[in-house]
Image (cartoon, rainbow, N blue to C red; front, top):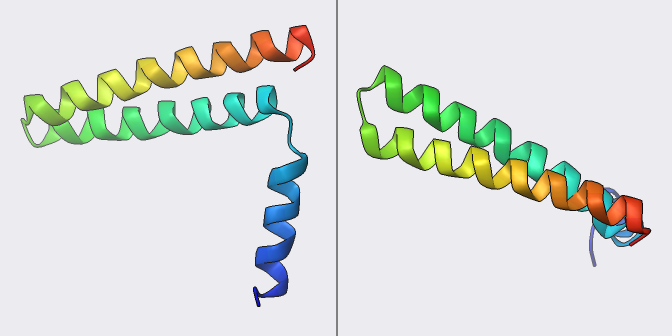
Length: 74
C-alpha cells in the first residue's frame, strides 16, 4: 500500500488537465535545460551545453503546446 502522501500526489496528477500538465512539464524542462547549459559553459563542455539548449527549446515548445490545449479546452 502506498503512503498517504503518495496517494494524494497520484490523485492530484490524475485530476490535472493535459494542457496544464504540459505547461508545468515544459517549464521544468526549460529550467533543467538552463541549468545544463550553464553547467556546460562553466565546465567548458560543449556537448552538455548543446544538450541543455535542446532541452530548453523542447520545454518552450511543450509549454506552448500546453497553452494551445488550454485555449482549446483539452
